[in-house]
Structures are given as structure tokens and as C-alpha cells.
Image (cartoon, rainbow, N blue to C red; front, side, top):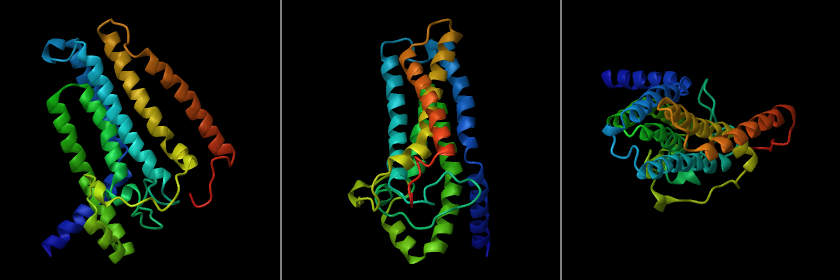
Length: 253
């Protein structure tokens, strides 16, 4: 009875956290910016700060985030309607995704999110902050994943159990890859992931500009800031097209 109660409690916690899962990036962003400024103000405490290797490291951080975004784009682009969405009110799954990215890992979108947000913690060069972020992410999403798996298990039964038994939860196993059951939809990918691309570039540019201005130096990545400005304009154009036309609509996607 106690185990059942604990199970129900974890599921309820996961449902509540699912609705507010957009809050975690804001927490990481706030603390991450503070720690990043400490790196700029106290370069003597961070071996890479102020060295030629600093740029390489920051480009590596950006590359990790872009890899996470690519994971999300590939995942979303190959899925049908009413799956792998950004819904926050309740779980939605008209069918079970088991091919493409979902054949190598059960939660590819959360894996992509992790890599994108990891960029923020890595930019601080503070190993303890990075460890704290990883722990917080694991603690936060463990409950969400638990609640989602309970929902999927009840809805899809043995189909879900058979897929989950051979597919890892978070660390991909590429040997189990199966070709995606749906062709890639650029329209769906653009509609769903434009937010992620803009947020990624804005955060990186924000850290660079605020960090350098804090120590009265010129931002290092003005090219990326210019790209961010272009993407911002494109973002609002896409939003207008999505809201006022059917150009990005695609049956079943």
C-alpha cells in the first residue's frame, strides 16, 4: 500500500511539474547569468578565462546546444500530429512513437533540452554549478518522465511495455535504430522549433554582451549577435505566417 501511495505521489508530482516545465530554463538562466558574470569579474579563478582557449570553449558550448536543437528538430520533424508537442496542460499522444529518434531513446526531446540548457551552465566554467544543474535537471525531469510513462503505459499497454523494455530512457543506444515511420516535415519543424533556435541564440548573445560590457570590453561575438537579429525578424515573420495563413499547415502533421 505504501509503495502504491509513493507511486501515486510521484505521478502527481510529475503531472504538476509537467505543466510548469518551462520554468526550469528561467531558473537556470538567472543563476547561470550570475555565475557567468562572476567568471568575467574574477578571471583568475577560471583557468580558461582570458586565454586563447576561452573562445574555443565557448564555441564548444554553443555546438553542444546546437546539437541538442538538432536532436529536437529531427525528432519533431518525423512525428505525426498530437505527439511530441509543446502542450503544457495535459499529456497528449494519439499514437506511440517508436521509430526514428524514439527507437534509440525514449525521451529524445528532453535529451535535446538537456543539451541546450547545458550550454548555459557550461559557459559559467564553474564545475559546481554544472554539477548542480545536472542534478536539478535529473531531479525535475525524473518525476515528469515517470508521470508520462504511467500515462503511456495505461493508454498503449503491451505495445508501450515492449518498446520501453528495449529502448533506453535517456542515454541513446544507436544499435536499436529504426527508420522513422514518417517522412521529415520541414513545416512542422519550423513551426515547433523556431522558439528553440531563437532562445538559444538570444541566450548566447545575451551572455556575451552583458558579460563583456560588465568588464568594459567589446562583445566578442558580434557576428552571432547579427545572426540573432536576423533570426528574430524571421521568427516574427513565421509567427505571422502561421497565424494568418495555411502555408505551414500539413495534414496529419
